[in-house]
Length: 82
Length: 142
Image (cartoon, rainbow over all chains, first blue to last red):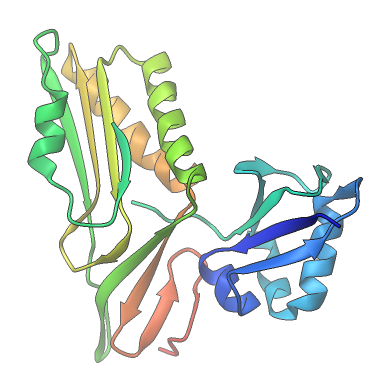
């Protein structure tokens, strides 16, 4: 079965205790549903949920958007470049 | 020129690349790392990480936004990742325009947008732990 690759950055990587995980993905799963799985597996992420943004294949995405097998999902804390 | 680099930024080279005979102004913004202090503790250095290639693409998008809004002829943004010691440039923006007002405004827009949309994070490494800037998450207790 194809998987979804999930990348964590910055404070989210600290909280997840990892920089990358792979999840099995079925067609029709949304980003919000994927988040529910992630936050169960990495409960320390939940307190910073409000500050997080997400990207699917390198573009900002909302919770309603579908995640398909083979996609790359990124968990993005508030950006602070400069 | 939109680039994420791992070593020191050659500020002079970024400025020289912006020079054009049809422009009367080059506005340059240099963002440098700042040492904060808190009691006995202080920042030792900063560490930047980027989500590439999304970060590269977002820098280019900022360049396109600028060219749509202002009459500018050249935009460069070079951002550093990895360890950056105190006072060193972490980002350099150079905008060349026929007139100075446009160059100033576009340069300001570029740094504000970097802080909104470019997936780059910085971590302050203190003498007693670290803090992710913006998230306030880290090992520092002070």
